Amino acid sequence: MTETPEIANPKIVTAAMLVIGNEILSGRTRDANMHFLAGKLTELGIRLREARVVPDIEATIIAAVNDLRARYDYVFTSGGIGPTHDDITADCIAKAFGVGIDVHPEARRRLEAHYEAGMLNAARLRMARIPDTATLIDNPVSAAPGFRIGNVMVMAGVPKIFEAMVASAAPTLVGGDRLLSRTVLALVPEGAVAEDLGKLQAEYPDVDMGSYPAFRSGKASTAIVLRSTDKARLDAASEAMYAIFRRMGGEPFENEIV
Image (cartoon, rainbow, N blue to C red; front, top):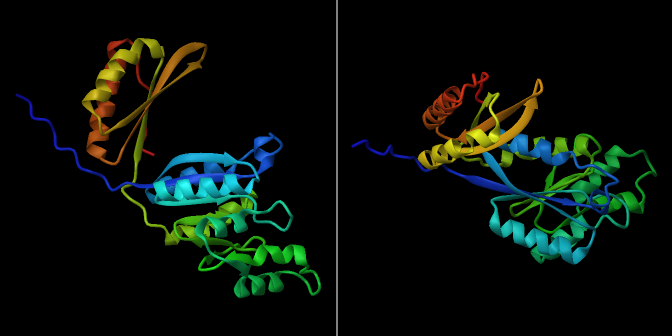
């Protein structure tokens, strides 16, 4: 009898992203931050499990923040911390946590250092309003900081600034076991491989498997993406997938661990 291999329990750290803004939902602005955040979190051993987009409506933002922060280790928000009347994210975060909000002395100092004399008007000073107990997230691009309160990181929506804030916050994040990935490709239609793929997934329940059909050089192809924190199990499942494709007459493409 073949013994079932012992499967280690990986340390899993999860995150969600909350994108805030009517301009995203209307189609006027295309969100570019989720792709960046997912890649960065993967590097840190944090799994982005959910991304949600909400309008600039106070009750909706508060409900989403409270729901996500209760279910995930980290929550990252983008958008709504600028100088205009519709930038309500900071106030919503304060209400979600039940704390006050006011101009943060250090945030104000940074803005004063950034703007020329007389340029820090009331609108721009709104960007220094930070919920009580929150800590600042550096913004080396335009000075106005983001902030962290509890497990929620609040960041700007402008991609260049968002990316800079993520880089500033990254050293404070504690990740889990890094998820490794392999992609096995062959000129085999997805329908032909579906049954065997299902059996392989049952044999390797600890390896995530996804199937992605496409056309390459005018022929149907299938890419199987396999992910696991256990390199040995990932290798074994990948080799088994190679064998399945070869049995169907398709020579698999090279694959790499990412």
